[in-house]
Image (cartoon, rainbow over all chains, first blue to last red; front, side, top):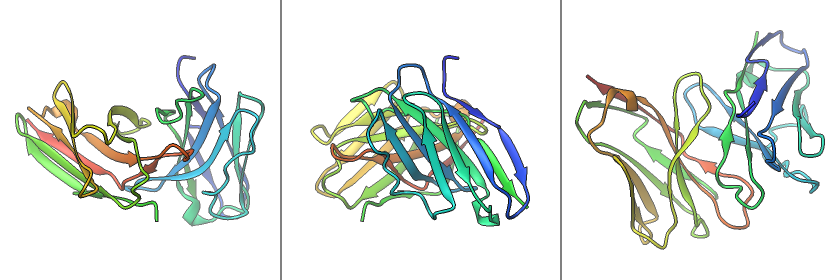
Length: 114
Length: 112
């Protein structure tokens, strides 16, 4: 596709379950970011991947959160033992190398933890 | 602290009016200040951006004003239209940074 694709668009899970969110970046974009957006709030940085460099994980809120990226393609964000406070929209963005400031966002995955 | 503070949280403007959203930052190393627009159910999209070597940038009805000494920047939407109703986020970053620091967002409603 032409844009950043995220799946699932909506996920409802029970507290304590693990969830996996997927992001397909724009082809050719080497940088990939995950942000979290709680209801009515701003965007909270989670993690950043750039090519084959070690990811910047400084925004991950706890060790229950992890993310992987295979090369310069798909990324998955995994949340283990979900808690109600994890309920949010998880946004993925990608950008060209050297132009990491112009982010192209997907429509997000809305996670609801019951 | 890499913070960007945005105000107001919500704004209601009549069609044809001027919408003004303000942001303030603390980190003097910031050197790039974009604004993103987000419609309900969609991801944010880049609207306009400015670097601190200029005090103003205009693109159509959208203008960024930048005050380096005050560490503030603002978005002005002239002749606001109902289609401008969205949430607006200011952001900032610097050369060594890998990600944008976003403000808390402003929900704008333009009444017909």
